[in-house]
Amino acid sequence: MAHAHPDTHAHVNTPCSPQDVEAFLEQAELLAERNGQRLTKIRRKVLRLLLESSEPSKAYDLLANLDGEGSAKPPTVYRALDFLQEVGLAHKIESLNAYVACGHASHKHSAVFLICDECGAAEELHAVATTEALRSETEGAGFRMHHAVIEVRGICRACTS
Image (tube, rainbow, N blue to C red; front, top):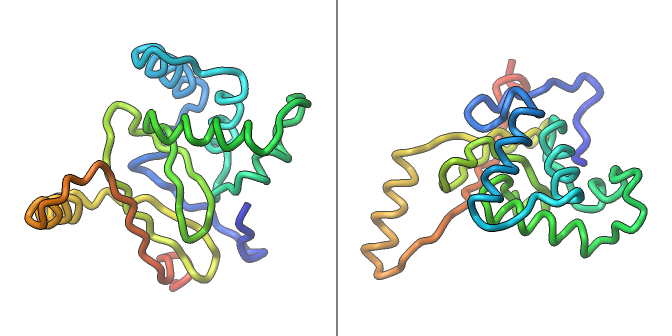
């Protein structure tokens, strides 16, 4: 997982971070069932690790934390992450090659991430107007957008204080 400064500070990703992990895992199971899929033991464990992490998580860090899942190999973790992204339970932050949980499983949305160059934290921002503008511009170009991930690099409010 990304390493923050020793005087690390947690970012509260209010719009997308579920506050009750157990309740969210139950919702995730129902969402998977509604889609005709299952939240398998590995998928559930990977989602739990993402939910409990205060930072974006790399796949190999998730693999290292799958204690008790002896048969888990890198492809197993990547398949679980692909599933979680597909159903809207996780996002990949491409520039960090890392993943975060998303508490907005009830709808698909584009993700806008604010990534701090000082502490390495990432916060998801609901930039509704930005997403609508992007959709309008892509449609104007004759392109049908399925989803987008926008990454904004800079210094977070805690590091500028």
